[in-house]
Image 1 (cartoon, rainbow, N blue to C red):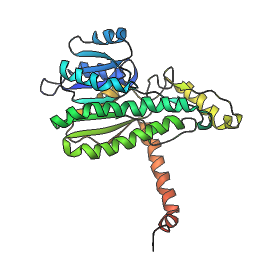
Image 2: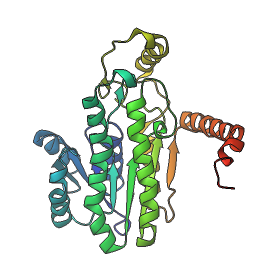
Image 3: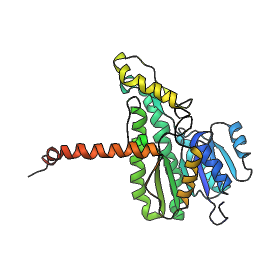
Image 4: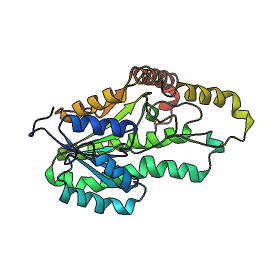
Length: 281
């Protein structure tokens, strides 16, 4: 339980389910105040009933970028200083790159990337003024590793990873921390009702794609990761003096990211002479 001096105000996007909901509930249990964004007024009222006076619901779609500055200004004035921004709102798009419509690609980036950047730009003026704050961007191990059939999703998470890391270097001297939180497989709705699945049309991809789609659907709800434990870790993260720039969550994330790093090192080494050959002599 956080005492009054260590209690923080968290702004979490997308608190209706998944990591956002788990983190909000755990933060409220530990004595923090939570501002959560939701999609409609009925959901905001239900959210505020979790802990009246400590849970505050705001109707906000992060793709409506023009509404974000005024919403954050209202939170700062009515609720109080935002200590932590958690960019959690997002979803997965499953589909082969060649088959994906550009509208689907744009929507994936609108939510997972542009919405997160708009939220960051909204809170930073206040955090800079106070010389304090912490931004958690919920990316994914899929912001480091890749699988066939998730290229558009991976692209959005790779983008958020790069933005997070660069931002961390930009604001480090201003008393603001940035952490990319990279979960593996957790028992959320990510691979279930929350996932958008593109239409299939090219049979050439069936052998590489269909087994992975089937496995993903069968594995949904059976993942190793516990969202409540992830929430507890994130609360420890915002309490530490020197938080990491990256944090993997889950043993599967450790394994798969480790394999990716080893692969990169091997490939770079094998082609090092070619890479060096492009320098001026």
